[in-house]
Structures are given as C-alpha cells and as structure tokens.
Length: 88
Image (cartoon, rainbow, N blue to C red; front, side, top):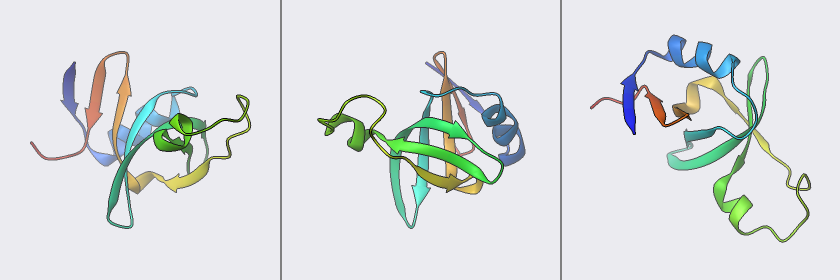
C-alpha cells in the first residue's frame, strides 16, 4: 500500500469524488478511529465507524452513520493508495 501526502484542500477534493464504502481515518474529540463513507455532503462526510459495522447484527442499511466535518478527516484509502495529511 502506498501513501501519498496531501494538503487538507487536496484531501477534500479527493473526498468529493468518493463513493460509499471507502475507508477513512478520523480524529474526533481527541480519538482516532477508522470508518467507512456512507455519504459525502457539503459540510462533511457521513460515516459509519468500523466498530459499528463489525458489531452490528442488523440488516445491511440499518446502521445509522454520523457526520464528521472535513477537517477531522486525516486519511482516505482508495484502491490501495492512502491519501494522508498526517506528517511522516
């Protein structure tokens, strides 16, 4: 897996082109967690934390996501490439 370092603006531009299911690394209130994109919106991305997916016993589509602002997204993984705004 290769890592490409990008600015926050470049990451935002990549996110605008994403579809549901892509993996993100998010930092929210001091906690980092991975999540899957449910929907990309104007003010943020609606995601489902991977822990919710793994622990769910509901039918697909029944897990409610949370919206996180773009500035809380640290990484995006698309087709084996990680677009990261984290320092080395």
